[in-house]
Length: 356
Ligand SMILES: *Cc1c(COP(=O)(O)O)cnc(C)c1O
Image (tube, rainbow, N blue to C red; front, side, top):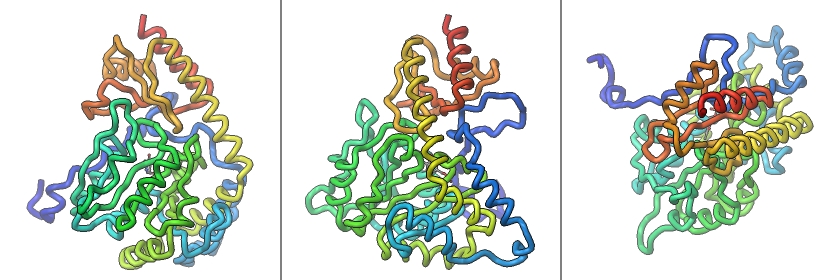
Protein backbone atom coordinates (compact mmCIF):
# COMPACT_ATOMS: atom_id res chain seq x y z
CA UNK A 1 0.00 0.00 0.00
CA UNK A 2 1.42 3.40 -0.93
CA UNK A 3 -0.05 6.86 -0.80
CA UNK A 4 1.31 7.37 -4.32
CA UNK A 5 -1.01 4.72 -5.77
CA UNK A 6 -4.26 5.78 -7.35
CA UNK A 7 -7.28 4.51 -5.38
CA UNK A 8 -8.18 1.92 -8.02
CA UNK A 9 -4.69 0.37 -7.74
CA UNK A 10 -5.00 0.09 -3.96
CA UNK A 11 -8.20 -1.91 -4.45
CA UNK A 12 -6.88 -4.40 -7.06
CA UNK A 13 -6.42 -8.16 -6.47
CA UNK A 14 -4.01 -9.03 -9.30
CA UNK A 15 -4.02 -12.40 -11.08
CA UNK A 16 -1.49 -14.91 -9.74
CA UNK A 17 -0.01 -16.89 -12.64
CA UNK A 18 1.10 -20.49 -12.25
CA UNK A 19 4.70 -20.84 -11.10
CA UNK A 20 7.46 -20.59 -13.74
CA UNK A 21 10.23 -22.30 -11.77
CA UNK A 22 13.87 -21.38 -12.37
CA UNK A 23 14.96 -24.92 -11.44
CA UNK A 24 15.78 -27.27 -14.29
CA UNK A 25 14.58 -30.89 -14.38
CA UNK A 26 11.17 -30.19 -12.90
CA UNK A 27 8.25 -31.80 -14.66
CA UNK A 28 6.05 -28.80 -15.24
CA UNK A 29 2.37 -29.73 -15.50
CA UNK A 30 0.95 -26.53 -14.00
CA UNK A 31 0.35 -23.87 -16.68
CA UNK A 32 -1.13 -25.73 -19.67
CA UNK A 33 1.81 -25.09 -21.98
CA UNK A 34 2.16 -27.43 -24.95
CA UNK A 35 4.75 -30.19 -24.40
CA UNK A 36 5.78 -29.90 -28.05
CA UNK A 37 7.96 -27.07 -29.29
CA UNK A 38 6.63 -24.69 -31.94
CA UNK A 39 6.55 -25.75 -35.58
CA UNK A 40 10.02 -25.75 -37.24
CA UNK A 41 8.49 -23.41 -39.84
CA UNK A 42 7.72 -20.92 -37.06
CA UNK A 43 11.32 -21.01 -35.85
CA UNK A 44 12.56 -20.49 -39.42
CA UNK A 45 10.20 -17.52 -39.90
CA UNK A 46 11.39 -15.97 -36.63
CA UNK A 47 15.04 -16.32 -37.69
CA UNK A 48 14.28 -14.84 -41.10
CA UNK A 49 12.56 -11.84 -39.47
CA UNK A 50 15.66 -11.06 -37.36
CA UNK A 51 17.27 -8.47 -39.59
CA UNK A 52 17.69 -4.73 -40.15
CA UNK A 53 13.96 -4.21 -40.57
CA UNK A 54 13.59 -4.45 -36.77
CA UNK A 55 14.49 -0.74 -36.70
CA UNK A 56 11.08 -0.09 -38.30
CA UNK A 57 7.75 -0.08 -36.48
CA UNK A 58 5.57 -3.10 -37.22
CA UNK A 59 2.48 -2.87 -39.42
CA UNK A 60 -0.08 -1.30 -37.03
CA UNK A 61 -2.85 -3.34 -38.64
CA UNK A 62 -0.89 -6.66 -38.71
CA UNK A 63 -2.42 -7.25 -42.14
CA UNK A 64 -0.30 -10.24 -43.11
CA UNK A 65 -1.17 -12.12 -39.96
CA UNK A 66 -4.83 -11.10 -40.05
CA UNK A 67 -5.05 -12.27 -43.67
CA UNK A 68 -3.61 -15.66 -42.69
CA UNK A 69 -6.16 -15.97 -39.85
CA UNK A 70 -9.03 -14.85 -42.11
CA UNK A 71 -8.05 -17.47 -44.72
CA UNK A 72 -7.70 -20.20 -42.11
CA UNK A 73 -11.17 -19.62 -40.61
CA UNK A 74 -12.82 -18.53 -43.88
CA UNK A 75 -13.92 -15.12 -42.55
CA UNK A 76 -13.28 -11.59 -43.84
CA UNK A 77 -10.37 -9.35 -42.81
CA UNK A 78 -12.59 -6.83 -40.94
CA UNK A 79 -13.71 -9.73 -38.71
CA UNK A 80 -10.22 -10.24 -37.21
CA UNK A 81 -8.52 -8.46 -34.31
CA UNK A 82 -5.03 -9.39 -33.01
CA UNK A 83 -3.11 -8.61 -29.82
CA UNK A 84 -0.28 -9.67 -27.53
CA UNK A 85 -1.77 -12.88 -26.22
CA UNK A 86 -5.45 -13.43 -25.61
CA UNK A 87 -5.07 -11.88 -22.15
CA UNK A 88 -4.42 -8.54 -23.88
CA UNK A 89 -7.24 -9.16 -26.36
CA UNK A 90 -9.54 -9.90 -23.40
CA UNK A 91 -8.42 -6.72 -21.62
CA UNK A 92 -9.47 -4.74 -24.69
CA UNK A 93 -12.71 -6.74 -24.94
CA UNK A 94 -13.52 -5.83 -21.32
CA UNK A 95 -13.11 -2.13 -22.03
CA UNK A 96 -14.76 -2.10 -25.44
CA UNK A 97 -17.67 -4.52 -25.05
CA UNK A 98 -18.26 -5.78 -21.51
CA UNK A 99 -18.65 -2.60 -19.46
CA UNK A 100 -22.40 -1.88 -19.54
CA UNK A 101 -25.00 -0.93 -16.93
CA UNK A 102 -26.25 -4.51 -16.69
CA UNK A 103 -23.64 -6.74 -15.03
CA UNK A 104 -21.36 -9.05 -16.99
CA UNK A 105 -22.20 -12.72 -16.47
CA UNK A 106 -19.67 -15.56 -16.27
CA UNK A 107 -19.48 -18.95 -14.49
CA UNK A 108 -18.58 -19.14 -10.78
CA UNK A 109 -15.72 -21.46 -11.63
CA UNK A 110 -13.85 -20.12 -14.61
CA UNK A 111 -10.66 -18.40 -15.77
CA UNK A 112 -9.59 -16.43 -12.71
CA UNK A 113 -8.41 -13.49 -14.81
CA UNK A 114 -12.03 -12.43 -15.48
CA UNK A 115 -12.75 -11.03 -11.99
CA UNK A 116 -9.31 -9.36 -12.03
CA UNK A 117 -10.21 -7.43 -15.20
CA UNK A 118 -13.57 -6.53 -13.64
CA UNK A 119 -11.63 -4.93 -10.78
CA UNK A 120 -9.26 -3.07 -13.10
CA UNK A 121 -11.93 -1.76 -15.45
CA UNK A 122 -14.74 -1.24 -12.94
CA UNK A 123 -17.04 -3.84 -14.53
CA UNK A 124 -19.82 -5.19 -12.30
CA UNK A 125 -20.36 -8.94 -12.66
CA UNK A 126 -22.61 -11.78 -11.63
CA UNK A 127 -21.06 -15.24 -11.15
CA UNK A 128 -23.46 -17.93 -12.39
CA UNK A 129 -22.90 -21.31 -10.67
CA UNK A 130 -21.94 -24.28 -12.82
CA UNK A 131 -24.15 -27.33 -12.37
CA UNK A 132 -23.26 -29.94 -9.72
CA UNK A 133 -21.19 -31.81 -12.35
CA UNK A 134 -19.40 -28.61 -13.44
CA UNK A 135 -21.33 -27.97 -16.65
CA UNK A 136 -22.50 -24.63 -18.01
CA UNK A 137 -26.30 -24.81 -18.30
CA UNK A 138 -27.29 -22.66 -21.29
CA UNK A 139 -30.70 -22.06 -19.69
CA UNK A 140 -28.99 -20.12 -16.87
CA UNK A 141 -27.83 -17.53 -19.42
CA UNK A 142 -31.16 -16.75 -21.03
CA UNK A 143 -32.55 -13.38 -19.89
CA UNK A 144 -35.55 -13.31 -17.61
CA UNK A 145 -38.59 -11.70 -19.26
CA UNK A 146 -38.49 -7.92 -19.08
CA UNK A 147 -34.92 -7.80 -17.74
CA UNK A 148 -32.06 -6.11 -19.54
CA UNK A 149 -29.43 -8.78 -19.86
CA UNK A 150 -25.75 -7.96 -19.48
CA UNK A 151 -22.95 -9.36 -21.64
CA UNK A 152 -21.76 -12.95 -21.24
CA UNK A 153 -18.25 -14.41 -21.15
CA UNK A 154 -17.11 -18.02 -20.76
CA UNK A 155 -14.26 -20.22 -21.92
CA UNK A 156 -15.10 -23.22 -24.08
CA UNK A 157 -13.87 -25.69 -22.96
CA UNK A 158 -14.22 -24.03 -19.57
CA UNK A 159 -11.12 -23.50 -17.47
CA UNK A 160 -10.10 -25.02 -15.14
CA UNK A 161 -12.80 -27.71 -15.40
CA UNK A 162 -12.00 -28.71 -19.01
CA UNK A 163 -15.68 -29.39 -19.79
CA UNK A 164 -16.92 -28.40 -23.24
CA UNK A 165 -20.26 -26.79 -24.05
CA UNK A 166 -21.85 -28.15 -27.26
CA UNK A 167 -22.21 -25.67 -30.13
CA UNK A 168 -26.03 -25.97 -30.04
CA UNK A 169 -26.00 -24.69 -26.43
CA UNK A 170 -23.71 -21.79 -27.36
CA UNK A 171 -26.08 -20.90 -30.18
CA UNK A 172 -29.02 -20.97 -27.72
CA UNK A 173 -27.18 -18.43 -25.54
CA UNK A 174 -26.21 -16.22 -28.50
CA UNK A 175 -29.66 -16.32 -30.11
CA UNK A 176 -31.37 -15.80 -26.73
CA UNK A 177 -29.40 -12.63 -25.97
CA UNK A 178 -29.67 -10.55 -29.16
CA UNK A 179 -29.06 -7.31 -27.23
CA UNK A 180 -25.92 -8.50 -25.42
CA UNK A 181 -22.43 -9.50 -26.54
CA UNK A 182 -21.47 -13.13 -25.94
CA UNK A 183 -17.69 -13.71 -25.76
CA UNK A 184 -16.42 -17.28 -26.10
CA UNK A 185 -12.82 -17.69 -24.92
CA UNK A 186 -11.56 -20.61 -27.00
CA UNK A 187 -8.06 -20.91 -25.52
CA UNK A 188 -8.41 -24.73 -25.46
CA UNK A 189 -10.94 -25.36 -28.22
CA UNK A 190 -8.50 -27.21 -30.49
CA UNK A 191 -8.17 -30.04 -27.97
CA UNK A 192 -11.69 -31.30 -28.46
CA UNK A 193 -14.51 -28.72 -28.33
CA UNK A 194 -16.64 -27.25 -31.13
CA UNK A 195 -15.64 -23.73 -32.15
CA UNK A 196 -18.21 -20.95 -32.27
CA UNK A 197 -16.50 -19.31 -35.28
CA UNK A 198 -19.32 -20.62 -37.50
CA UNK A 199 -21.79 -18.52 -35.45
CA UNK A 200 -19.85 -15.33 -36.22
CA UNK A 201 -21.16 -15.51 -39.77
CA UNK A 202 -24.79 -15.58 -38.62
CA UNK A 203 -24.90 -13.49 -35.42
CA UNK A 204 -23.33 -10.08 -34.93
CA UNK A 205 -23.32 -10.37 -31.09
CA UNK A 206 -20.81 -13.24 -30.75
CA UNK A 207 -17.06 -12.78 -30.39
CA UNK A 208 -14.62 -15.71 -30.37
CA UNK A 209 -11.21 -15.23 -28.71
CA UNK A 210 -8.35 -17.63 -29.46
CA UNK A 211 -4.64 -17.84 -28.66
CA UNK A 212 -1.48 -19.37 -30.11
CA UNK A 213 -0.26 -20.10 -26.56
CA UNK A 214 -1.78 -23.54 -26.12
CA UNK A 215 -2.54 -25.49 -29.30
CA UNK A 216 0.23 -23.83 -31.33
CA UNK A 217 2.95 -24.12 -28.68
CA UNK A 218 3.69 -20.37 -28.65
CA UNK A 219 2.97 -19.16 -25.10
CA UNK A 220 6.32 -17.34 -25.19
CA UNK A 221 5.49 -15.34 -28.34
CA UNK A 222 2.32 -13.67 -26.93
CA UNK A 223 -0.24 -13.75 -29.70
CA UNK A 224 -4.01 -13.89 -29.42
CA UNK A 225 -6.89 -12.89 -31.68
CA UNK A 226 -10.61 -12.30 -31.79
CA UNK A 227 -13.06 -13.20 -34.55
CA UNK A 228 -16.42 -11.43 -34.70
CA UNK A 229 -18.70 -9.19 -36.69
CA UNK A 230 -17.05 -6.05 -38.14
CA UNK A 231 -18.98 -3.88 -35.68
CA UNK A 232 -17.54 -5.74 -32.65
CA UNK A 233 -14.04 -5.67 -34.16
CA UNK A 234 -14.34 -1.94 -34.79
CA UNK A 235 -15.15 -1.48 -31.08
CA UNK A 236 -11.93 -3.33 -30.19
CA UNK A 237 -9.91 -1.28 -32.71
CA UNK A 238 -11.19 1.95 -31.15
CA UNK A 239 -9.79 0.92 -27.75
CA UNK A 240 -6.54 -0.45 -29.20
CA UNK A 241 -5.89 2.76 -31.14
CA UNK A 242 -6.51 4.79 -27.99
CA UNK A 243 -3.94 2.75 -26.06
CA UNK A 244 -1.17 1.16 -28.18
CA UNK A 245 -1.63 1.16 -31.92
CA UNK A 246 1.41 -1.09 -32.62
CA UNK A 247 0.69 -4.05 -30.36
CA UNK A 248 2.01 -7.01 -32.38
CA UNK A 249 5.75 -6.74 -32.98
CA UNK A 250 7.50 -7.78 -36.19
CA UNK A 251 8.81 -11.09 -34.83
CA UNK A 252 5.45 -12.07 -33.36
CA UNK A 253 3.67 -11.29 -36.61
CA UNK A 254 6.15 -13.36 -38.65
CA UNK A 255 6.09 -16.33 -36.26
CA UNK A 256 2.34 -16.28 -35.76
CA UNK A 257 1.65 -16.15 -39.50
CA UNK A 258 3.83 -19.24 -40.00
CA UNK A 259 2.07 -20.99 -37.10
CA UNK A 260 -1.40 -20.42 -38.55
CA UNK A 261 -0.24 -21.60 -41.98
CA UNK A 262 1.42 -24.83 -40.74
CA UNK A 263 -1.79 -26.82 -40.40
CA UNK A 264 0.00 -30.15 -40.66
CA UNK A 265 2.18 -29.61 -37.57
CA UNK A 266 -0.79 -28.19 -35.65
CA UNK A 267 -2.88 -31.27 -36.42
CA UNK A 268 -0.07 -33.62 -35.47
CA UNK A 269 0.62 -32.00 -32.08
CA UNK A 270 -2.96 -31.44 -31.04
CA UNK A 271 -3.87 -35.05 -31.83
CA UNK A 272 -0.88 -36.25 -29.81
CA UNK A 273 -1.95 -34.13 -26.81
CA UNK A 274 -5.52 -35.47 -27.06
CA UNK A 275 -4.23 -39.05 -27.17
CA UNK A 276 -1.99 -38.51 -24.14
CA UNK A 277 -4.85 -36.82 -22.25
CA UNK A 278 -7.15 -39.75 -22.86
CA UNK A 279 -4.44 -42.18 -21.74
CA UNK A 280 -3.73 -40.16 -18.59
CA UNK A 281 -7.45 -39.96 -17.79
CA UNK A 282 -7.64 -43.76 -17.89
CA UNK A 283 -4.54 -44.17 -15.70
CA UNK A 284 -5.80 -41.68 -13.11
CA UNK A 285 -9.18 -43.42 -12.95
CA UNK A 286 -7.28 -46.67 -12.48
CA UNK A 287 -5.65 -45.10 -9.40
CA UNK A 288 -9.08 -44.23 -7.99
CA UNK A 289 -9.27 -40.58 -9.09
CA UNK A 290 -12.51 -38.93 -10.21
CA UNK A 291 -11.59 -37.15 -13.44
CA UNK A 292 -13.85 -34.52 -15.00
CA UNK A 293 -14.24 -35.37 -18.73
CA UNK A 294 -11.83 -32.94 -20.43
CA UNK A 295 -11.85 -31.42 -23.91
CA UNK A 296 -8.73 -29.38 -23.07
CA UNK A 297 -4.97 -29.94 -22.67
CA UNK A 298 -5.36 -30.53 -18.94
CA UNK A 299 -7.46 -32.67 -16.63
CA UNK A 300 -9.11 -31.91 -13.27
CA UNK A 301 -8.88 -34.86 -10.90
CA UNK A 302 -9.71 -35.54 -7.26
CA UNK A 303 -8.99 -38.55 -5.12
CA UNK A 304 -11.77 -39.47 -2.69
CA UNK A 305 -9.28 -40.52 0.00
CA UNK A 306 -6.46 -37.95 -0.38
CA UNK A 307 -6.35 -34.21 0.21
CA UNK A 308 -5.51 -32.32 -2.98
CA UNK A 309 -3.12 -29.82 -1.38
CA UNK A 310 -1.21 -32.68 0.28
CA UNK A 311 -1.02 -34.55 -3.03
CA UNK A 312 0.28 -31.43 -4.80
CA UNK A 313 2.94 -30.98 -2.11
CA UNK A 314 3.98 -34.63 -2.32
CA UNK A 315 4.27 -34.40 -6.11
CA UNK A 316 6.37 -31.27 -5.77
CA UNK A 317 8.79 -33.11 -3.50
CA UNK A 318 9.19 -35.57 -6.36
CA UNK A 319 9.89 -32.78 -8.85
CA UNK A 320 6.43 -32.59 -10.45
CA UNK A 321 4.35 -29.41 -10.29
CA UNK A 322 0.60 -29.34 -10.85
CA UNK A 323 -1.94 -26.58 -10.14
CA UNK A 324 -4.20 -26.43 -7.12
CA UNK A 325 -6.96 -23.81 -6.69
CA UNK A 326 -8.49 -22.42 -3.50
CA UNK A 327 -12.08 -21.97 -4.79
CA UNK A 328 -14.16 -24.08 -2.35
CA UNK A 329 -15.95 -26.04 -5.08
CA UNK A 330 -12.69 -27.28 -6.59
CA UNK A 331 -10.35 -27.20 -3.60
CA UNK A 332 -10.08 -31.00 -3.63
CA UNK A 333 -9.07 -31.12 -7.29
CA UNK A 334 -5.68 -31.01 -8.96
CA UNK A 335 -5.37 -29.48 -12.41
CA UNK A 336 -2.82 -31.43 -14.37
CA UNK A 337 -1.55 -30.11 -17.72
CA UNK A 338 -0.93 -32.71 -20.40
CA UNK A 339 2.82 -33.17 -20.80
CA UNK A 340 4.72 -35.61 -22.98
CA UNK A 341 3.90 -39.32 -22.69
CA UNK A 342 7.00 -39.72 -20.50
CA UNK A 343 6.04 -36.84 -18.22
CA UNK A 344 2.54 -38.22 -17.75
CA UNK A 345 3.97 -41.69 -17.06
CA UNK A 346 6.28 -40.14 -14.44
CA UNK A 347 3.28 -38.44 -12.84
CA UNK A 348 1.30 -41.69 -12.68
CA UNK A 349 4.31 -43.49 -11.25
CA UNK A 350 4.81 -40.79 -8.58
CA UNK A 351 1.10 -40.88 -7.65
CA UNK A 352 1.24 -44.66 -7.32
CA UNK A 353 4.05 -44.35 -4.73
CA UNK A 354 2.25 -41.50 -2.91
CA UNK A 355 -1.14 -43.20 -2.74
CA UNK A 356 0.03 -46.46 -1.09
C1 LIG B 1 -4.23 -19.47 -21.20
C2 LIG B 1 -5.56 -18.78 -21.26
C3 LIG B 1 -5.69 -17.51 -21.81
C4 LIG B 1 -4.53 -16.62 -22.10
O1 LIG B 1 -3.75 -16.98 -23.07
P1 LIG B 1 -2.61 -16.01 -23.64
O2 LIG B 1 -2.97 -15.93 -25.06
O3 LIG B 1 -1.35 -16.73 -23.35
O4 LIG B 1 -2.69 -14.67 -22.96
C5 LIG B 1 -6.95 -16.97 -21.96
N1 LIG B 1 -8.05 -17.63 -21.53
C6 LIG B 1 -7.95 -18.82 -20.95
C7 LIG B 1 -9.19 -19.49 -20.48
C8 LIG B 1 -6.70 -19.42 -20.78
O5 LIG B 1 -6.60 -20.58 -20.14
